[in-house]
Length: 85
Image: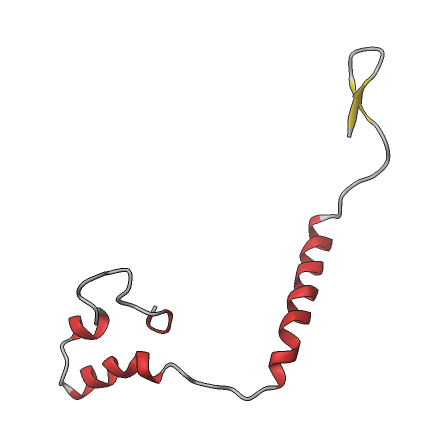
């Protein structure tokens, strides 16, 4: 917060300052770790086999590379799930 002095110069009013960027980054990292911690004890699941199956068909030679990369020809936005990005 700032105010004006008698001489027309801006001066700082109050002594409160925000956290330093390093402290803020550390706080975000700790909060992120705390949010993910419960899920780290579970098993690792690979559930993208349905999305990755076009690449297996391409490797066998039963599907063209264009069709493997863009399985939905009606919409480009819906054609690639996150697993294929």
